Amino acid sequence: MRTTALPTFRKLYGKIEVDLNQGDLIDVALKNNYNTYSFNGKKKLVLSTTSWLGGKNDFLGIAYLTVGGLCFFLSLAFTIVYFVKPRQLGNPSYLSWNRNQGGH
Image 1 (spheres, helix red, strand yellow):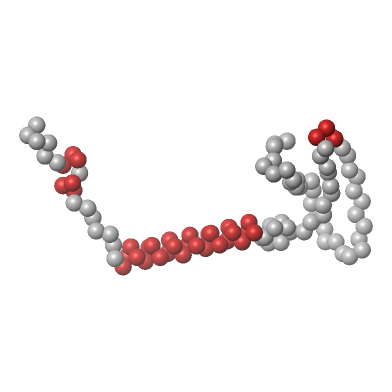
Image 2 (cartoon, helix red, strand yellow):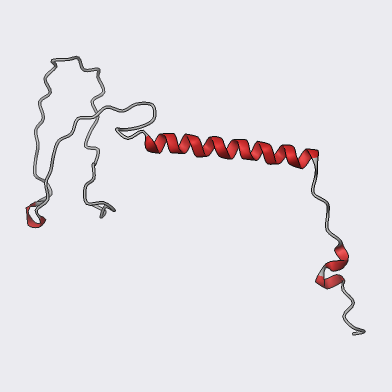
């Protein structure tokens, strides 16, 4: 197992591939394969649902969509600006290998 960045974390154990209805019973058998007693750790079973944005927290999905949309519109704006008013090329006489080296 890798060390986590935060003291509390969730690790996906499995998925329920069928639709559940209200009142359905789920039997779960838990085994203590990793001892957490030495550092006062706790284990819990959490049943959660997911949406099209991801897990329980929608912030990461919303942040990805927002930043992606912002990048798309900025790239579109910069492309329009480039075609409407293109950047003027520089003067090649200012390049170091085009300068007069003082008579050498």
